Amino acid sequence: AQVLLLEESVRLARANYAVQVRDYRLGIVTNLEVLTALAGIQTAERSLLNARIQTLLADIRLHIAAGKMPGMRTESDVSNRRTGHPEFEAHTIRPVAGQIAFQREAV
Image 1 (cartoon, rainbow, N blue to C red):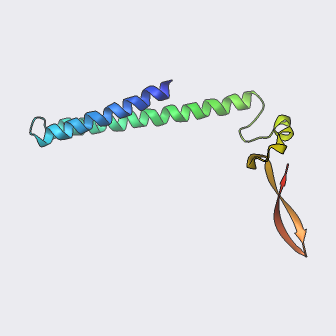
Image 2 (tube, one colour):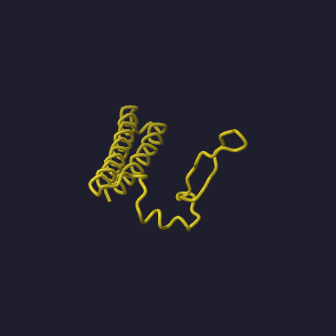
Image 3 (cartoon, rainbow, N blue to C red):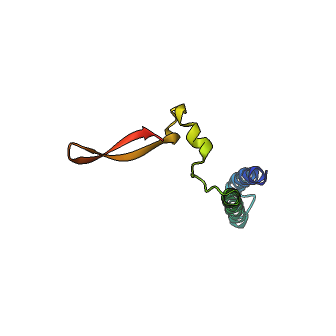
């Protein structure tokens, strides 16, 4: 929910900047208002990125607390290997005519 609000904040900051640039060209505002609007965009984007990072970190912490690292396979993942989904395939190394070659096989 916070990420959605911050995305809207970025959109509004960009719209405000566009208005300030237009008004500057018309001689209604000074370059200070334009620069302030630009700083507003940067602040909103930084807040959005920080929120996204915090969301990802929370997801990682949740996986760790559950005993499963992101990307780690569980028994249920292995039982779903017949889906043919690339996520459930693995690369193995097998000798081929005296060479080592990679082959894909279902896990």
